[in-house]
Image (cartoon, rainbow over all chains, first blue to last red; front, side, top):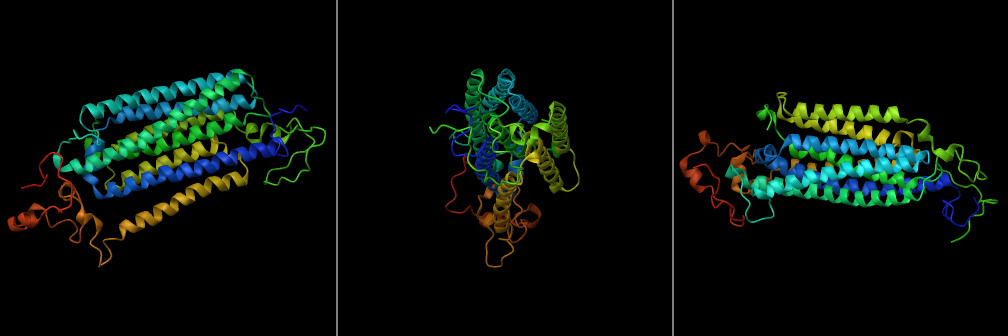
Length: 222
Length: 191
């Protein structure tokens, strides 16, 4: 391949080095994301330790099975994204489009469910950023408001990451439609896959932390 | 853009722990072409990993409703399962099991740095009550928390329990002056 627009960028010696550099670049970014979400989770842990019963009361009012359904949907999206990378390794652009499309579908379902959950909370005056906030029982109101602040912040930040992911997936599909991915050049699929798996990992921790606080008292379920 | 000269690529100096491919191999075949991970992870593996993740999701939800005796066990189990799921996703979906050592160092570093954050932050709050000079930060939380389940304070949170409290003590127990007014208008205090 001696064209001036080959898959190898001029600063790299060969495709292996380019692939390694691209992967390391994404992991360096993901490390910063770990610190970003990790900081939020750490703050949540400290506050939960201070208001254990209020946080449990607020968490028990979340719909655990809707959260579980969403977790399942996101795990499916992780599988389909991994399969998109798998197809890209063989230069199967149609397969990439198929699996990235399925990933985007799962992501949209997740976001739709999240929109329903947010609406439900707002309508029931559980939105901490509105002055209409109230919580029953009232002695837990301060702690519950803090819990819900964390809930909206972390899941909102997570949802924002998912929307960005949808944009990246759109870009991938556009590239795949032009048949750009080959066994020697599929880095974009690989690293966007890394980003998406990270988004899944954040939710893997967020779900039990927000939805499953002290459910032993409600053994029959919500 | 500089044209890539396939007839004479730059001298091979790249050392990242990977077996370095023949620099004259311009089409990227051999070790670099498909990447080592392609030869190890097939469709079956991905499906098995997915099944494991779904099973662990069921375990997470199920264990949340089981009373293991001590309260702390539920959170330990929930986070333990989450760590296992994360490890599986990182190793197989994110190909880290088959990545170069350098990539693995990047991954571990991110987690290690988070560990530093946790150790220092939690160490700060967990040791505040232990210091004789400190007031314990939770003593200044709004009253609703102290009655709603706070277990902190130099007295271990037992002062304001009904059995340990006289009416005078209850009346003297004021909210901190700079706390925001209670949203529902009441104090949430048990009278």
